[in-house]
Length: 161
Image (cartoon, rainbow, N blue to C red):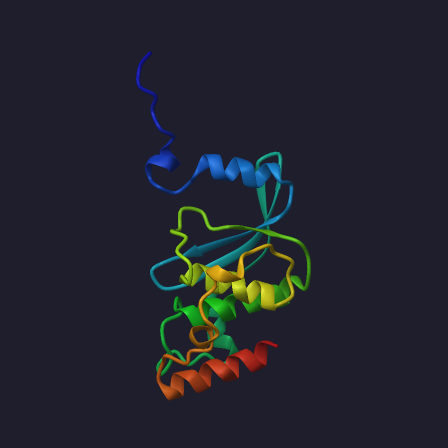
């Protein structure tokens, strides 16, 4: 028996096929969370016969329209930015039951990708997740950041609610 060639997307560390298959088998629409070098991309995706269809999507870049100050503010891939991006998508979708697809992202508790999940849940979506993995409330609200950044995060949060 010879060696088996890995699929291209697996070789490139882009797709975990085993995980994807289990997510698709559930039949529940999923929310795909990806972090790029600058932003978060969060999309609600429905799959029919392995054909993915994006229902709604937001990037953390959209926070700029909601009062996030690009010059004074922190990074758009920080924990508070992730949380607010999650809130933004939840506001678009209004309600529903979803599962989270973190893809190849490392799942360390308290990490940035989980701040997005917390935002989605606080926004009113039905997602099963363990409270232990979320970043602390202080970090979500930017308490660890400079005062002007903290105030800006508070303003954006009020606008999204």
